[in-house]
Length: 114
Image 1 (cartoon, rainbow, N blue to C red):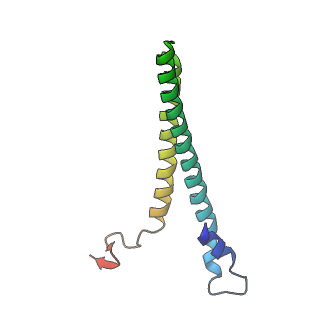
Image 2: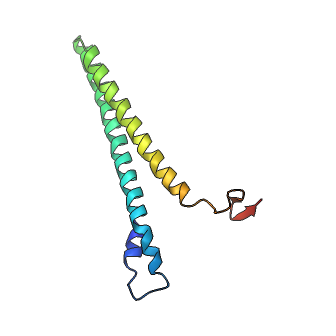
Image 3: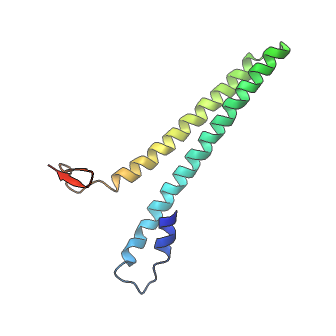
């Protein structure tokens, strides 16, 4: 997000750095994916917490809770799965745009290995 702000601060007069603004849509896409992944993971955590509360309260009150627990468990796992998928998309975007042009060259700690 800070990088997007810095890139937006580049004026049209700065011809040397103006090409850097072309990176803004990719950064916005990554930010959107990360935001939705975090929100989905939080929703999964809330469902998991509700599952525990409902399960223990139902057991304490001796109520049938099998169906409600199954729905909450399914929802929590589905939300977590979608969250991980979105996070994976963001990682793929980040890696694909930072890979060296020569795929036979590996970089490690700022050094170049062949």
